[in-house]
Image (tube, rainbow, N blue to C red; front, side):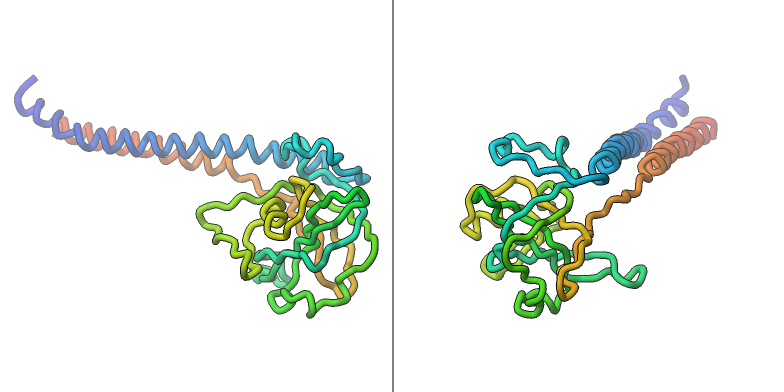
Length: 248
């Protein structure tokens, strides 16, 4: 190999390293999307097999310590008890609005439901607009006596890097976490899951239940192919660049 050829080959070391790093990132993103695809398909299957049909009973309190979302979430259930309205927690969120692209901004009302056994299940009764955060603005919806709730079992929400921290002192919440509510409200024997109430109307129209999204988009294969396609394109571009550099 001549000195000129050797210098040309050496000049490809840095571009080659950069290309390898970028290639690894693109392949990693494509693989991650395939993993997300498998997860999403499993979630869709859970919804299809559990969320419809006749409602069942919630998991007995004796089995709450072993509760697992992958075995129980999205199951349609029916439960009776008494709402503890004075202990409700408003969780900031969005819901589909009357116009496409204009979501309803408001609060999901999480209310403890005291069962006949004395145990408690947190019920997401649905959303209310911003201006109805105060329970006094919607007295018709504060149901007295024993009520029966039909809805879907849901797992607690986990806070991520983009979720603001809860501020219990100001009754400001951003995640639906039954244990966090229980600790602040001084409740014991609280279920590790929530129930999202169905769309059965409440007096006065609020809270508005039935907000659980049951139709989930699954575009992960398309995304994976896009990342893999970019990886192949990168290889082609580097190959052309290297060929031109060596032969030039």
